[in-house]
Image (cartoon, rainbow, N blue to C red; front, side, top):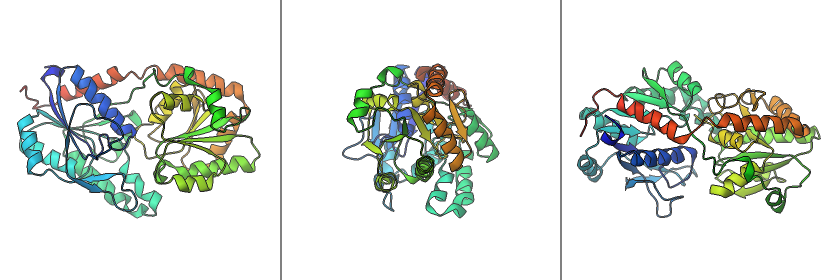
Length: 383
């Protein structure tokens, strides 16, 4: 069997209505599968004005806005009659679930009743989210729910070896593989650096730029980011701050960092220009399963200061392409940022090393590895 024998039903809690690293990877995967001759049908919530057009056939599933001021996201409901009929007509021989939500649970149940193999891709460390909202006591219960979900799947793929090891320690599955991420080198490369653009958005040409890239939500470590920047200011280390992205915590971060430049959402070549025009990327988040923004910065020749956590520790080579710092260690983060702010030769050398290290992340090779995982599943039938 090869990819052309696959009929994959892909279930996603957010395939294209809000842009994030997870759904960018899923859309690239679907594009690769279609080019390889596989049949793919995607089931996900939809909105009238999505962030970007979907790759492949997308079937809208019932959903409702997430409560608590996060209505840009939607909670997918389980499969209703129309969805089940559509799925039966498609006749998948493999189910891929990308989120442990109601829809994902329903998809696993559907597949198990029909002896269809299930592969789950892990994108986000959901069990870490409560700590950012004063609910850390919920983490063990959420971890138990996640374990129940992933153990029902035939295989789980993690985006990095460090994340795979976390899943093993949490006893999430006995069959854990790797589906890492790639980089679009047409968009992310050092040639995108544009000092005229940088000056046009209000960044002084003689100050090193510390950048943040991502959704502006508290679980991205915005408190750590702002506290470390405050520490640099108290130490009188000259710098400027560029924040690329948008989200519900934007007002909070603007209040904390009133002198920072906020560009809002950037996409495509504009995003590559913004990242390459930074001097340092600061990524303090511990919630990612893979540090997409870390890899994008490295491909642009920008050294990275990141939390030593699942999102970045398999990407950054400490003191070679950037720094890995204990999560939440504000003073140590500030030390690392200060070193880069005051030593341009260090920034250049480690940025160049980052470009070289990022070259091994090729999207087609990455996605073929997942296809190989699909094809190894026991019980896979050729339709």
